[in-house]
Image 1: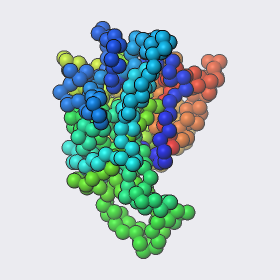
Image 2 (image 1 turned 180 degrees about the horizontal axis):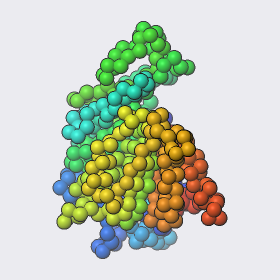
Image 3 (image 1 turned 120 degrees about the vertical axis):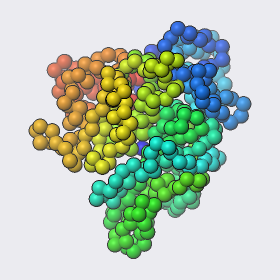
Image 4 (image 1 turned 180 degrees about the vertical axis):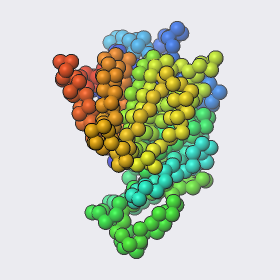
Length: 418
C-alpha cells in the first residue's frame, strides 16, 4: 500500500501504556533478559540469517524482540530516577524499546537494486478491464543496510517530475510486504506490493491523447487523456538490475504484538495486504518464526479478510492456501470480491459484508485482551467495522465507537488507511 507526502509518526492512542507489548528489535543495554518468556521471533543467535547493520557503529540483531513488560518497567523506573535519554540517529524508542527509524532520508537515500523474486512473478494480477488492473511484487536488495520490522514502511523516490513538477519526485511511502528477514530470509532484501495507478480522462493528466505509450505490462491508452501515478509506474516498470532509491524505514502503528498466543484479525483491501503478508510470512513461513523442533512459535489464531473488486485482483492466494493447509487450526482467510459476489440478501460483498457472516464469533474474540485488529487499505474500512459490529455491540449494551476507542487505547486496534 502506498501513501504520499511526509512521514507522520503515527502511534495508536495510549500506546505507551505499560501493558503494551510489541516485537523487539534491540534490547537496550543493561535491561534484564526474560529467559522464560515465550517469544515469537528467533533470536539473532538462533537465526541463520546475517544480522542487518545500521549506519554508524550500531548493530541491530535480526529477530531480537522488543517491548517486554519487564523491560518497559525498568525503562520507566530509570526515567523516574532522572536518567537522561540520549537520542540515537536511525532509531526511535517505541514502548521503551528501539526500532529502526528513518535510517535513510530523502536527501540521503539508500541506493538499492532490483533482484528477481524466486516465488512471485513481477505482475501478480491479470487484466480485468479496468485501466489500473496491474499489481506488482518487487524485491530490492539493500545489502542488510535497511533493517525493518513487519508492519513498517519504506519510501521510494522516483525520478519525476511529479504532479508539482518536482524532480526528483517527492517520496511515496509503501507498506513493506516482506517479513524482516525478506522473502529470501537473508535479511538483505525488502519486497513491496504496488498497484500501478492509471486514470483515464480525469482531472489530473500527464499524457494527452496520443501520448500514452505501452508500459512494461503492455498496457496503453492512446485514445484517452491519461494520468499515470509517477512513483507507482516507476516501480512497476523496474527490471532486475535497476537501481532504486530507498528511504526509511518508518512506522510504528502496525507492529505485531509479542505475545505468541495473540489472535490477529487482519482486514485488507487491495495492496493493503502488504503488511498482512509480512506478518503471515513470519508467523507461518520463516525460520525466524519457528522453534528448534520445527513447530511455530505463534500459538494464536490469524484470520485474514481481504477485499478486492475482481477475483483476478486477489493477491497471494497461493500463500494463503498453503498456510491454511499446513495450519488449519491457526489460520483462516475469507475474501470479499465486491464486483462479483453477493451475500444472501443480494448485497455486494465488501469486507464488512463478509465479516457480518462471522459477527458473533469475531465479537467474542474481540472481548479477549489477546485479540488485535489490523486494518490497511481504503479509509472506509473503519466505517465498515461500525456497520458490522455496531448492532451486536448495542445488544451487549456497548457503544461500538467507545469499544473501538478502548481497543485503540489498549494498543489492540491498528489502522493504516488512505
